[in-house]
Image 1 (cartoon, rainbow, N blue to C red):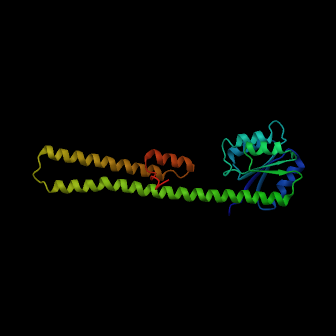
Image 2: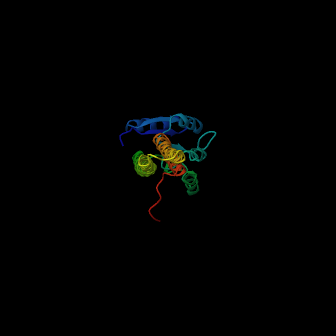
Image 3: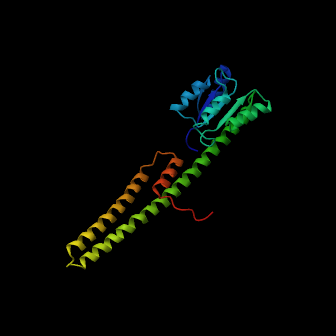
Length: 227
């Protein structure tokens, strides 16, 4: 992972927040801290982080409630959230995990353990993103191959039709009109496929799953080879 990971620390206790921010920054993370979940959520809208450390006992909105809101937009893989709390009751841990937290760290924090869990979560996120990108590339390549085959078919028929017209120099007007209509239909088929290729090529900043939905919609996603 070459990119400097961005981490948000949500902790209402000033000394704890500043100490955690400083120690993570010393490990070459890009870190910013917030005392409330509302501020962290607002920041995420404009500057999404790679990982969040979320205290649970926060003013106005609990960390668990904030996690639930975050999970409406970001998945476990795209945004690891580590709940950091002094509450060690098993029900609290279960509630946080069920809300969408990836892991649960107990206060007082053992920084080495926390750092190991952060690195593990970020590595997992990186690995998943690489797998998703590899699958996206595979689907795109197969889809483009399928579309290329689709456009080759009407073009081949157009060539055949033109050769047939050349071999019929004395064709009647009605025969010529019929041949031209056939060529027009084939041209429209080719243009439709080319337009699909152009639309596929424009999907550089669309989320992967949306890309797949579009490919299915235009009919260029190849059929599976089996169950």
